[in-house]
Length: 100
Image (cartoon, rainbow, N blue to C red):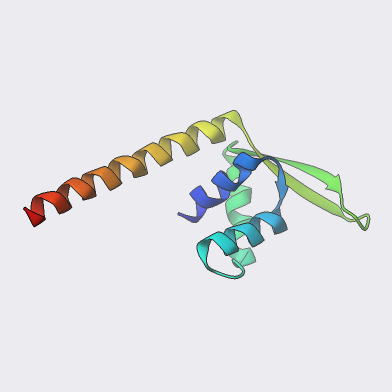
C-alpha cells in the first residue's frame, strides 16, 4: 500500500524524497515514515522505470534528488487503483449478500 501512496503523491508533480516522506507520513497517519521504507521504494521505482530521478541544487547548495512519475508509472498506478476498486466492489457485494 505504501508503494501506491508514494506513486499517487507524484501525480501532483516532481517532488524530492523528504517531501514525499513527510506527505506520505501525514496521509498514512504515521508522523514520519521511516527512511528505510521510503527510499528503497523510490530506488525500486526508478529501477523499474515507474519514476525518474533528477539531481537538482537545494536551497543551501546541497544536491537533492527530485522524483517524477513516468508514463509507465502512471499506467501502473491507474491499473493498481482499478484493481483495488474492483476488490472493494467485491467486498461490498459480499457484505450485502451476508446481511440479506
